[in-house]
Amino acid sequence: MTYRRFIDRLSPVQLLLAAALTLAVLIGHAAAATTGPLSGPLVEADWLKANLGREDVVVLDTRSANGENDPYLEGHIPGALSAPYPGGWRTERDGIPGQLPPLPALEAHIGGLGISGEETIVIVPAAASSSEFGGATRIYWTLKLLGIDDVAILNGGYRAWTADASAPLENEAAEATPVAFKAQLRPQLLVSSDEVRQRLGESSTVMLDGRPLSQFAGKEKHPAAQRYGRLPGAVNLDQSVFFDAETGRVVAKDAAMSLVPPEAAKADAEIVSYCNTGHWASMNWFVLSEVLGYENVRLFDDSMVGWTENPDNPVDSDRSRWDDIKSWWNGQS
Image (cartoon, rainbow, N blue to C red; front, side):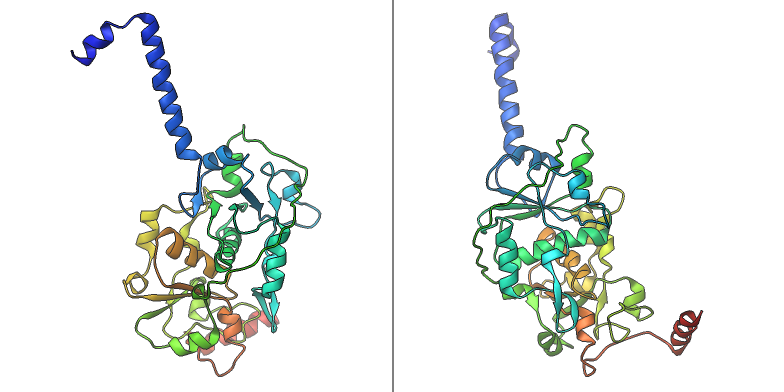
C-alpha cells in the first residue's frame, strides 16, 4: 500500500492523532538541539534560554560599571552573577599590569562565584566591541588554564539576549553561595618570557601578535611598554578581525579560517599568542584554539609590556627617526 493510499484510509481522528505525534517528535528534536551539554565554545541565546533553569548552569555577566552606572543592575539575564572584567580576573604583578592574579586569589575569586569546577559556565559580555568581547575570551582562557572544561561564551553577548524583546531580564543582583575551588593547572596553555626567549628563531614557533598594525610596526605603543615594536620574527593578526561589530558575534568558522596567516596555519606550528598585556591575545587564542581547533596554541601573559621590562630582550621595529620626531612634536603641542 502506498503512503498516499494509507493516509486516505485514515479517519479524521486518526489524522489528528498522527499530526499531534509528528508535532511532538519535531518539538522533541528542537528541544534536544537546544538543551543538554555544551556543543562548543560558543552558545546561542536559544540554548541559554532552554538551559537557564538548570542548577548546574552558572551565568557570568562580565559587564563593568561605568561611574555611577552599573549595566548589570539596570538589567541582566535572570540568575546571572556579576563577575565584572577585569575585576578579580587580572592584577598588577611585578609592576606589569593585567597579569594573572596569584593562584590562591584566583581560586578564592572563582569559588566565591559558587564555581567548584563541575558546573557548566556561560560567560556573557556586552559584546559592544572586539576589545570588550576580549574580556570574555580572557576569562574563558583563565578558566581553562585552571582546569575547568565546561565553559562557553554567549555568541553576541548581552546584545544577542536582548535582541528578543520577550527575553526575560532581572534587576536585582543574584547571590552566589561560595564553595571551595581547587585549580588543576594546565601549564600547556601559558608561556613565560623565559620560554619565549628560548623559542625565538625556531622555525616551528609562530609569534602571533594580536595588536593593531600601528603597534606591531612600532609606530605606536602601549603606555606601559618600555619600547616600540614586536617580538622578533612575529606575524601580525589584529584580533579585531574575528569580531563582527554589527552583530557582536565571532565571525563564522569559514571566515575565521581564511583570516589565519599561512605561517600559523601550518600543521606543525606552535603558536604563541601575545599583545600588550595578554588581553587581545586571548581573542586570537580563543578563535584559533577553541573555534578552529588548532593544537599547540599558548598565551603569553607578559606580552610586550612585560617583555620590554627587560632591556636585554630583543625587539623588532619599523620605527624611524621621523616617527620619534612626530611623537616629540605631538607631545609638545
